[in-house]
Image (tube, rainbow, N blue to C red):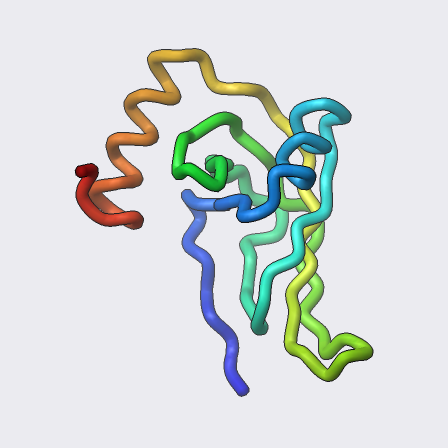
Length: 105
């Protein structure tokens, strides 16, 4: 058992529904497997499941727990600060591939 740390520039969605709720309602809760530490109170870049930068979000809560199935999970609540425009998205996506996701193919 241990905590993984999420750096302050990446918040990647694996679930389209969670991303939809963020963009539609301005707020969402994302669930990740394993214990993770998210920077509560900080603004981060949100990415689609396809690794495309879409928005700036503010992490409002990060709760690591063992659920009823015995799995370690972290629930992350966030608020939408604003969507990125096309140019910002292109630049942030390119930087993320170089720094976090690996080179684009």
